[in-house]
Length: 284
Image (tube, rainbow, N blue to C red; front, top):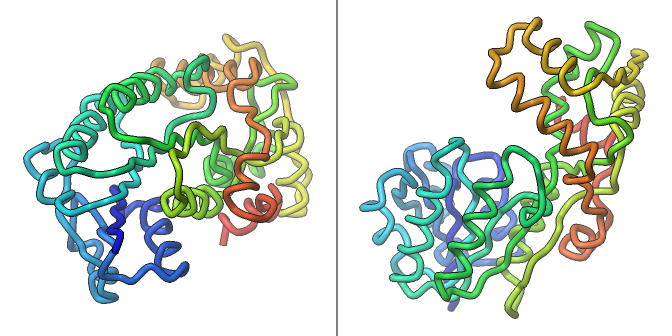
């Protein structure tokens, strides 16, 4: 029997990936949910899933968490500036435990992207390559939920403000990314690198989708990057965060988050959820 582990198993992506493994018929006893707070996965334990304590920031917890695991879904961490050290700890523990394959959730075009998030993912991919453990790299584009969380703001102002120009971003629902990750974990073969996202859309298309979902007209207003950063500061963001957010839009303008939907469609075995549907679902 093959034992599958998912890190970050109490997070949105990790929990849904565990659910997908179970939905696809993997026996619960063959699934390991690695969580920083195991008590948050009590529902999974109640279904027979092996819940183990594993904290990216506490390497000593990882050997026991990964003991006996054959395939590992490494869901990337969420702490900027800490990811490389955290991911390295997991990869090293996985190699020591004899894990046969790692599936890692990276970022779109990690090898060339100017996205502010890309450097840590790029270095993690290098660590993974040096580890000798066969790997599948899922270079995920942007979650629809990233924008859904801002819909109320869009409605209040009547606009989506940004600095992405006509750049396209391959937005997809988190649900789709999780299902794709589980599919990659179950698939045989060396896996390779997949650029994963939905059909590319502009932020003007996003505004149109918000209008469709809410019934309230919303338009996209494009600004130069420095003016967008200034607007974000005026809205209350600190200088570093404003620069970070504006930098993401600048990277969209350069095509860094445009993957197309071919790889996601192949992993899902169906088309990606349409943008309006993803926004609607994210808003409940």
